[in-house]
Amino acid sequence: MQSESLLNTKEAARFLRVSEASIRRWSDAGLLPARRVGRRRERRFAQVDLVRFLGQPGRLLPPAVAEPVRVLVGGAPVPVGTHIAPIYSTDLGGLRLSIPFLADGLRAHQPCFLVAHGDALDRYARALTRDQGIDLDAAVRGGQLGILDGPGVKVAEAIGNWEELFGQAMADGPQVIRVAGEMHCERRKFVSGAEMMAYEEAYDVMARRFPLITLCQYDAREFDGEMLLQALKSHPDMFEQHLGRFLN
Image (tube, rainbow, N blue to C red; front, side, top):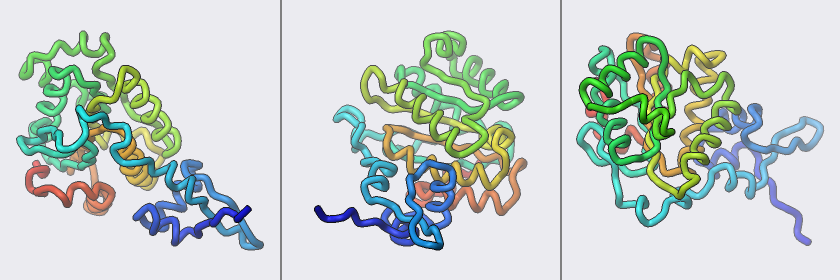
């Protein structure tokens, strides 16, 4: 029987279309299985594991939510699978896209998730109830809206938690899932800024397995320029859109 062909780190990165640093981070976090070979204990990856990690984009989407169905974000239609990072600098600007996005999903009885706590969560609660007429308590009690203070403190934990939540949301059949996350709230849960950026990269790959639309909201008052640049790089879908639409 022919032996299984293994890829090195560079080849695995090319296969997944990500950086070699991402491959190493995911391997170290236990997200991507790797074998150690030779005296230098170099990483080797089986193609079947890479395919399993990547998933098949859209393979969980039924005809009802597959392309060309799109979701409005800021008045513009974006395809299911979009993962973007709006950047804002005022409290009102931070709600401009995310509040209608969540309200539309709740009215359509789609599963929605919000990552926020403290003052940020209070702003969302007021805007959804007062401005959009959403019965927030009913949405939470009914399981349609999940509110988290953070997905985890390490990459593997955060991705594992999301996969479990998304799997539960699709228990009654595949449907569009909406996620809005206030990244300064998530940052306070992660052990470091580098860990959060590694999480963003891993989330971008994982999200392709599910019928998601994700808004990772970045408050420019909470992050420096380097972090915001990294955020843009970890959200390649931003460059498929008109960037000005997501700068508030």
